[in-house]
Length: 153
Image (cartoon, rainbow, N blue to C red):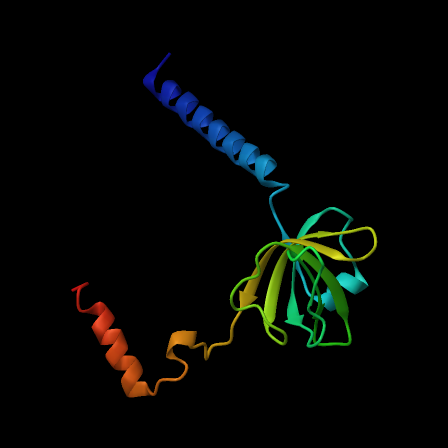
């Protein structure tokens, strides 16, 4: 076999290997993809029961209730329209989780229409200030930041 033919065979085998690896990766990740739903989208076209999805919206004021077990929390996620999805989460709530704030819940839709969250991600606005710095003026916050970075330099 000529050297030209050997190179051609190697290039074709390399391409087949790359395509095969890509297809294998896509097959392995097909169940790991989570679609993002807003409450109005979830009501209009709900995902299949048990399918892993993400639900994003605002925690409706007055809907956060701690259950008797002390770990399970129920609340309602609302969207821009008059849509609301009840959510149940068992676990430790994020520090930024509160009524009226943004939240992204990862989980599955149950048969009764309740979203069973496995993980909660609390969102904050672009004007976020850590609790430690909330009561400080700009000069005090800058001084604290300077003091905490002195040993790093």
